[in-house]
Image (cartoon, rainbow, N blue to C red):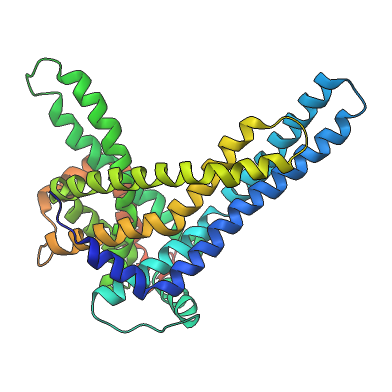
Length: 324
């Protein structure tokens, strides 16, 4: 059914407990920021609304809440590359080391050690974020190439099936970019762009087993997330009750926020621990297929861009421009 071990993934989560706790603190802090700033915006709107009738008060409260939520979302969007750099990539570094049988520090030192590894491999947060953007673009191109095969199969009603499959593959492929980053960390590469290209080719030539396992994990992730959402409706209702004015719709938003925090802090790293097992297993001993390299170069400008950046990278820094 799938090629990963849930018990091994849980054991890996337990061994990276300091980083799991760090993720919990970060993502629940983000959720708390959404709640506090949204509630503050609603309170300000409610206060302004006291100068008008009931309809005006309701509208002012809603607009205040929307403004607070939008402000927080904008700040988080601005800081998204640092979340990737400090949280996701750091946890991947610890996971990879343990899966390779190497020792990592315990306790709070694990987080600092992992961030040092990420800094050594990728440089700045903006560099890692730029690499991740290109990787996600190439992953999308690989998924598109696989989807294109369906359009040539003469099966009645396949167009509807293909549309559903395309949507599902896009969701399932969402885990792959972090797997590619993990491969860069695993090889201890001095040139992350070049190793990232090679890791993407290995993904493409093994896409079927990887996407099948990613599809199972997507079902598990979203099933658990739905369960968490239902559980979180109660605390979300309590938060909404504290916000002045009618804010029943906010209960759903806050429940989604709390469920997202659990998903990002606990469920996603579990899924990645599973998918890393599959990727390392199916690609073990393989070399990038030149045919797939050529195919990706033709299909994806982002893949070509990675090659250009790889050519200009020297031991962790961009090479100097040629002399005039």
